[in-house]
Structure formats: structure tokens, C-alpha cells
Length: 477
Image 1: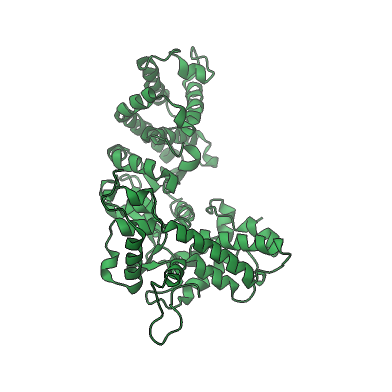
Image 2 (image 1 turned 30 degrees about the vertical axis):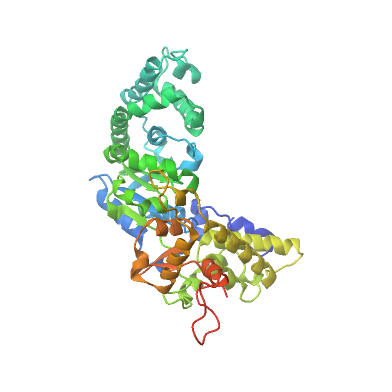
């Protein structure tokens, strides 16, 4: 099913900008050398932490990194590394929740519903073959029944009626499934909820955590008895830009509730949050906020990094025939991508479309040049001011907005390798968020300017060739 594309019209099938979650796709396309290239293996360290935590304590970690660096695929790898001790319950914030309005209790309810349904699955399908007890299910039902009574809905039995159930004489399992069906729709489209319901649930979040802990403890025991494993939640998608504000509310404002939660979990978070002053308020130990670094295509001296380019070439070769590229064109795309897989795949797909529209059978230099220019324009736009440049982390207006001139000055300092340029402040956070600055690990953590941004600085004559040189290294030329 997952074979190397030999024609331009088939390339898009293998270069989708989605993580390798399907086991067959993972086996066909995952490149272990890519992870080895990044330096310290953060995922292996998380796997080691999970191993120590099995049947001992609750392992909680957060993962961050630039968009397209491969976080989700690395989380798939973590599932494989931990499979002897854990069963993973994985959910995506942008698919299971309302991205713009989800509440902390939505995440907790989603986790509760998922663990109930996963635990009830047959053992051969990854479950425990055991439904939670009626006592646990009744606790969940009662929590919502009190809500309906308290906020005095027109129909006091809305929970049951909305689920289409006859509560008289119905089994608790059936009642729970009916409630879950209603809640999943409500969670997915949370913007339609009335203010009173949201406030009521937030005020009773402490009680919900207690109920969740008893439920998780019972479901974990069922899985231990059936398969000698424990449940591990992996929450993906919380790092996306349009979810960032809700993620901060979830894991900073309501951090104490997640500290109290008695389960193993790993969530993704926005890179800007992980490096902000509020990172100390997150509900995990500081060393367990880990970053998946970028892939080097230049070293700290702006010299060509052969190994990085070689590994990225191998990643592409597993998915498409390299003969589809005219000489030197794949390397041009690798450099322009800054080593970012999502950017690289997107550029190749666009170049293929341009070639097919033009009736070509190979990715010639003209097509590659067009897509590089297109992505460079995107980076130019990202360097402008955005909402986060004009306000503080608390949402208040900045006394001094982060202007482009501030950004350009910091970019030049980073390019020059000045030690003070690595100090985190709002300007550096903004540049990391816009992907203008990349993070690498090569013995030590260091920052580099994205090659397309180097091009922009050259075009603005902020960077010029050294005396006796004809080009500025580190760009796409």
C-alpha cells in the first residue's frame, strides 16, 4: 500500500502533511536517522521516564517544537517504545474539541469518556475487556444530573432525554453511553453552550477531578489485570496557533487540576508557551517540558551540514523516486525548507503541481524557484507584527510593541552567534513562534536564522558578504 511514487501525479499520496500514525505507514516511512541527527533523543528519555513510572507514580510531560518538525510522528514512536507497559489513548484537540472555545472540563470529560470506552474493548483489540463498575458510571451520571437541577433547565431530565434513553430501568452502561454520545457533540461544538452551564462546570471542576481519579484508578486496575499494562493519554494538537490561547488557559490557569489528576499523560503545547515566563506554572516538572529540535542543514558557522541533507534526502527517497528531481533541485528544496518536513513536503507537492500543469515529467529548476519564492514571501509576512507582538502574555497592550526593527536586530545577533542573543525575551519568543528562528541541538542548544529569513535580510542589505566573499552563507543561494 505504501510504495515509492514513480510519477509526479502520485507524489502527493506519500507527501501528506500528516503524522505517521498508521503502523504500516510508520514502518514504511519512518527514518530513525532523522531523530539521531537531532542530538539528545528526547523521546527515548520520555520512554525511560514512563518505564520508571509504571505501577509507581504518574508520568506527566509536555512536548513542543516548531510546526512540521515531526512532534506527532515522534509521539507515535513513543507509543511503540512504551507498548510493553502501556496502552495509549490518543486524541487530537483540533478534532475532538471546539478549538476556539473548549473548556478545561471538556478535556477532562473527553479523557474520562475515552478511558471508559477503551477499557471496555476486548483484550485482543487493545482494551481490558471490562466495563467500569456501575458505581463509577453512576458518579458521572449524578454529576450531570445535579447540574441540570441546579441551573434549572426547562426540561430537568435533558441529559437523559437528549440521549434518547429511558432512564427507568436502563442499565448504567447504556445510560453512560447515551450521555457520552450527547457530551461528545457538545464538546465538539462548545460555542453553543450557555454561560450558566460553563460557569457551573468550572465551579465544580474540583469534584469532577475526584470522580475522574476514581474512574481512572479502576480502569487502570482492569488493564493491569487483563494485560499487565496501564493507560497513557497522549493529547495532540494543543500546540496549534489557533488553539494556543485555550491551551494556556487549560495548562496554566487550571494547572492545579492537572497536577491532581492521577494518570499518565503527555500533551503537546505551543513553543511560545514553553519558553514564556508562565512555563513555570505548567503542571509538570520543568525538565519534562521537552522540545523536539529542528533538523540542521547548516552548522553554527553557516557551513553546509552534509549529514542533515543526506538524512532528509533519505526521507524523501522513501516516498518518491529521486529521478523525478532535476539535478540539484532536491537539495535546493531541502535548504529552503530549513530542514522542516512539513515545509519540504508542501514545496515538493506544489512543485509537482506546477510541473504537471506545465506538462513536465520532472521537477526542473524553474518550478523549484517558484515554490521557494512563494514560501519566502510567507516568511516575510510572518516577520510583521501580529496580535502577540502587540500584547503581553496576560492579554494587555505592550508598552513597547515588538516591531520589525527589534526583530531584525535580534536576527542579526543570532546570525552572528552572539551569546546574549540566546536570552529569552518577548522578541525571541516572537521569532521562534514565527519560525524565523530555529532551535538545534549539537552538544549544546543553539539558535539559527531560517535560510529564507537570511535571504530576506540579504535583500534588505542588513546582511552583506564578508570582505573578499561574494555570497552570504546560510541562505538559499
